[in-house]
Image 1: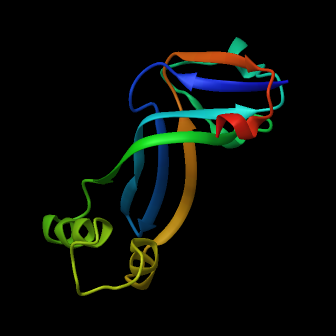
Image 2 (image 1 turned 90 degrees about the vertical axis):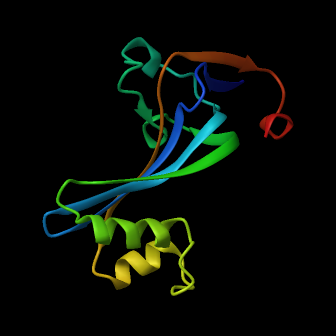
Amino acid sequence: MFYQIIPLEIGSLVERNIFQQSNKEIKCGMVWKLGSVLTNIKPLFIKTYDPKIGICIEDIPGGIISKKYGGEKVIYFSDTVEDEEQDELTDIFYQSNRKYSKSHEDVFHDLGWTQVSSETYIFGELEIKELDDAPSAYK
């Protein structure tokens, strides 16, 4: 038996990366309009699940992202990041700055930022469907 966990609200599947440098922080990643998580282990987390907080995909036993659609990149900064630096980091993140050819993660690292976490979350109201077929039919 397989279980498909589907958020009922648009934008409830989020990949978040956090970078830090001294007293500064960047939160960036992807927000998918639609998506789902697949597991072959009955989701018991739902008993204590808080839709406002959500759950990290890594905390769902057997959980993997099986579908995602309409991803949008987003970036946020702590108040301690100066406006000029925010502009440069935003250009790097959206790859609109031809000055750098590497991925934003590599460029952030080269500029002295340390990646402290990279996690994918699902939150909001969820629907859990039991699937009888092999998961490859649902990817």
